[in-house]
Length: 258
Image (cartoon, rainbow, N blue to C red; front, side, top):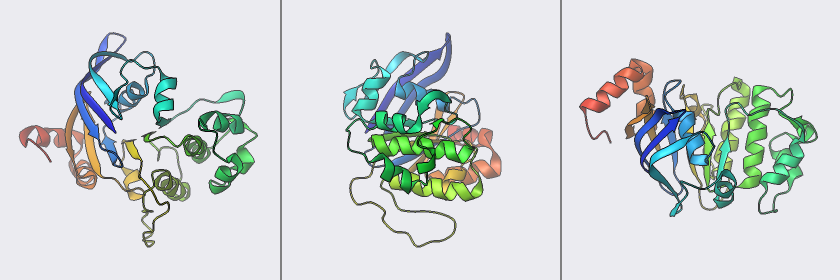
């Protein structure tokens, strides 16, 4: 689904991602760990094609097509969707309207989607205006539900969300990705949607989101360099016990870490 080869990215003349290689197969969800300032969000913005992130070397391939030079709108139409950690407030634009814009195939029932997210009361409010952290996340997910992208980029989906809301957010992400419900309350796993699973790159600093979604792989980004790739829960356990620096040291001493 996504292949990144020898990617080098600069912002304002400073290298922020260096010789990065990554592959996310079709139907897999990968977790990208890293401390604050390690380049996680910059990678997401580069994949999506935001200006200011200058690719000086390497390429990004999506569904077999080189998208390195494509603008944001074309990447979105090809099937890449993003949920921001801190999306802006957009005064004068109603939530209903931005969801309709995201529905590129004109096939979504906005009212029905909003009902699933307990979000119908917010449709006629300006985008993110006076929304709580959990409400902002639901707004972002509602837009993705309308878009139905093949590759979903989620930046810190647990950030700013209370414990009660995070269960709902996790279930919604699993539904969007066509995955199984997974939450710490030990509910029986059940399939939510039949059909092909979507691919996803989920960015996290704390790793709390792993208590609520199912992941196939974990990777660590540290100082702009992708350090290791293995089972996401093993990585999280190591980070919690020893910290990111020790995680990176271990990956440098034991290669390949798979």
